[in-house]
Length: 383
Image 1 (cartoon, rainbow, N blue to C red):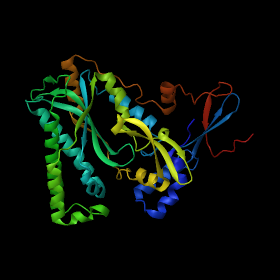
Image 2 (image 1 turned 90 degrees about the vertical axis):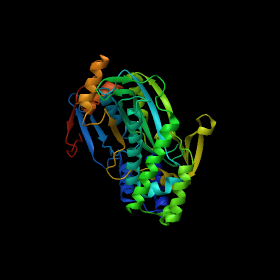
Image 3 (image 1 turned 120 degrees about the vertical axis):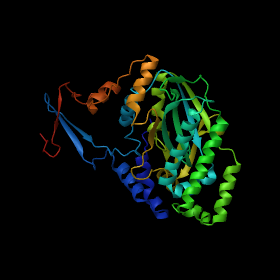
Image 4 (image 1 turned 30 degrees about the horizontal axis):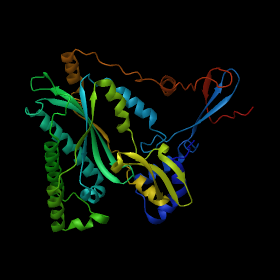
């Protein structure tokens, strides 16, 4: 069984990485969190059996959003909460990508450019959906930012889970067909125009910074060549999945919302100077293959995807936007004659969630079946 983790890789190769690169404060915070996760360095919780006196120690996790060990419960709670927002209607998975020529500027201006990605993709969907040629209504959708490809290469893109229907100007429900209701080429062209216009505005306002391979774009001539090149090529937007009803959407959401650049189960081996892990070969029907990278390069690629401080990677738009969701979704359920789904996990403490989802009972003694009681971990518990 594979017990390797990103924590093992960082413990082995982080010093090598630091000889070649200087981590940002946010990257350093992530490294420290993952390396200390569940080691006892972040504190612990102790419990004692009221029947037989057995002691159980639980090392605290780091709860960092980039840690592969800490995503399961937040993911399940988030997905469970979304049950209250889904409708029995078609849903579509749309992916917005940008040309790789823009990657140096995006990486040098992550906060600005990631916000621009969200803004332009959302504006594109809302404007075209409101057009009577396509839907003539305002849908609801969830956008999720990913910055990686399967090989942990830099590949910023937006995943959108889009409701195939919405409310028109009179607050009446309009539903799309089972096929996606906006031509992909139209979607791509509008998104391209909005994104490049936004990029030029950031340039004009002198908001952009230029580091590393993006330094050449300080020249206005080189920058304009980049803009012209990006206008001339077709941007790859595609419809990845179509769902039939709410249940399939709920199950699918977790695959994208709390994913990080690489998960522990993809790690195959750690040698003296390299890490071998599984990657998808999209040129070969998405089949899995192995890839080996020098240890410091694996760490570099992993840390490249640490988001800016407090950056929100999951955003809601349209009739799912926070300011109007309650009223708009109630109206949709009324028109579709559907009951609101209820969250199962809302308000439950972690022990009850563990028991409900995975039948893990941390409140029962493994030795005698008695009740475990939390105690002060600083007490002397030796018999």
